[in-house]
Each structure stands twice: as structure tokens, then as C-alpha cells.
Amino acid sequence: MEQLEHLREYLDMCDKMIYDALIMRNKIVEDITEYEQSHNIDIVQLEQEKRKRDHLKIISDGEKHQAEIMNVFDAILQSDKKIQAKTLFDCNLVLIGFMGAGKSTISSTLQELFAMDVIEMDQMIEEREGMPISEIFAVHGEEYFRNLETNLLIEMQSRKNVVISCGGGVPLREVNVAEMKKNGKVIWLTAAPETIFERVKDSHNRPILENNKNVGFIADLMEKRRPKYEAAADIIIHTDHKSKIEICREIVVKVLL
Ligand code: S3P
Image (cartoon, rainbow, N blue to C red; front, side):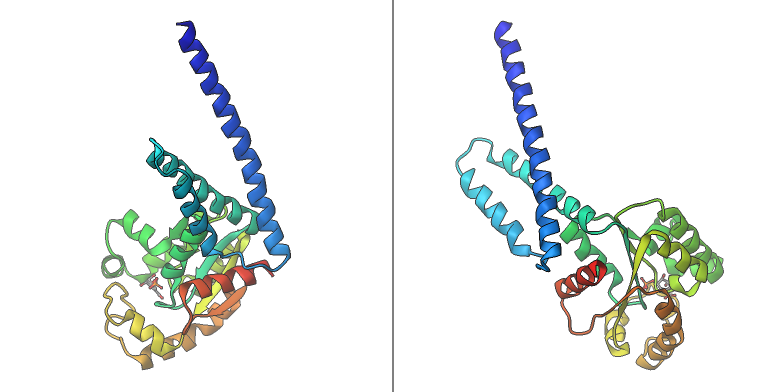
């Protein structure tokens, strides 16, 4: 019995050491992030994470509980990303742009890089309404859908340090833009109409494009909407011929300017 009590005490001591090490580690992650930021060093360093994971695999090789150790470190590496994002961005990142501009793709890349939560507005509306957007338009009409967008945007302003991926029509209403700007940096992703066409031509969940999938219609509607996107945007990113990582790098640089 006495032995069991000793073992429990040792375990508590270990927990305290892990706790102290984590506090120290988190501070180092913050310091590295701030150093990189103030010295204009690329924040998106994919090799660092791989290097760390490989190193941990090597040093834990042959260890009885290697898988469990790696799981813990995976969680630590994820929390590093969150700490990095919190240190860098004191706001939400709000992605706007025409259908097919890459909002969803770039949101999930930002999520991979910084472990930030993503609010995918279209998806959330579909889940809540229990039907795809095309059906919401058909059953309730566009105005109803636009009201859902506005309400969701207002609701999301209570969230901090998240990526909000807006539907393409969200910036068309002034009230939406005002909501986005309350605690978000608004990032406008753009692309050439030809690029947009290539990206949307096989999808069937965009009622506005469903019978209009041609470059001419897309170019006209983009032009019509341009002043609204322009008025909303804090940052503009041209996405043509750029990789997902290049686009995210550009976003980080411009958000931190
Ligand atoms: C719309 C864009 C769509 C979706 C709806 C209306 C628009 O979102 O919200 O079909 O008016 O531009 P994506 O931009 O994510 O395709």
C-alpha cells in the first residue's frame, strides 16, 4: 500500500515536470514566432514540423510505448501551431471572393498550417437547414438564404482567431461587411474568369451559375460584384498560377504588415 502511494507521488511529480516543461515550451514557441515576425523570416516553415517529427521518431525508436509518445508529441505540435496563430493574428481571417476563387481550399490550408478552426459558411448553413444550397434557393428563395448568411456572420463575431470562409455573395450586403470588419481582416481572393470557370464547371451546388457556366457570364458577374468586394477587402490576393502554400504565405505577410 505504501509502495502504491509512492508511485502515485512520483506520477504527480512527473505531471508537474511535464506541466512546467509545457509552460516553458509554449513561451519558446511564442518567442520564436515573435522573432520570425520581427525579422521578416518566413513563418510558414513546413520543414520544421517534419524535422521535429522525424527526430522524435528516431529517438523513440525501440521504445515500448513509442506510438503513445508520438501521439502526445503530435498533440504538442498541433498546439504549437495554435499558439503561433494566436501570437500572430489578433483577429479572425475572413476570406471573401467569387465562387471558385479558392476560399474553401485556402481555408483548409490555413487550418493545416495554423490549426485554426474554420467556419465554412455554406457548409454550416446547409447542415443547419438540412439541405444543399441549391435546394434552399429552390424551396425558400435567395432572400431567405441571404438572411441566413447575415445571421450566421453576426453569430460568428463572438469567435476569436478563426478562419471564416464566406459564400461568394456575402460581401454584397453592406451590413455583412460591417460585421466582418468588427474583428476580422477581410481577405479578397481573386482569379481570372477563365480560372474560375475551370474550377466551377463540374460542380452543381451553385444555383447562380447552374445554367450559366460560361466564361462570359462569370466575367460579367465578377465585374458587377467587383466594387462590393473592393469595398470590403483589407487585403487582395491574386490566386492565378500560385500554389496553396504560396497564397497562404502571401496572406500571412499581408495580414502582418
Ligand atoms: C454564392 C456563392 C456560393 C453560395 C451560393 C451563392 C454567390 O458560395 O454561397 O451558391 O452568390 O456567389 P461559394 O462562393 O463558396 O461557391
